[in-house]
Amino acid sequence: MKPRESLVRLKLFQVKEKRRQLGQLDLMMGEFERMASELDAQIQSEEKKAGIADMSHFAYPTFAKAARQRRDNLFVSIRDLMAQKEAAEATLAEAEAELAKAEALEERDGKSRDAEERPAPDRRAMIG
Picture (cartoon, helix red, strand yellow):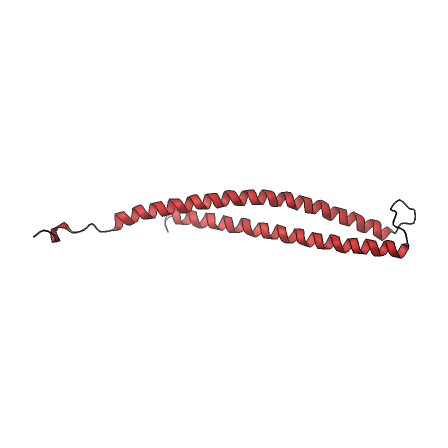
């Protein structure tokens, strides 16, 4: 295997890996958002059951307090994942640019090699 081919394969692997990471981040953010909406529904249900929606009230349900804290933690995690996603998108763009460069180098080298490997026309056959 030629060195340029292995470089292209490496860069292609890196691009695929970055895309996979972006997909995982999207899945995690979606899952966290789903969990947060379920917690919202549980909080509303608990407040409705207790008849108290004021968190500062002394009889506010403990479960609702805990669910609110978990939901808030999920929102913090979602914000962190968004920051990670932005960074991953930037590294993906860099990896794609490097892949394009490697492919261009391979193509350029491939054309020059093809010219070298192509047999020169036999000039003696044309004479006489």
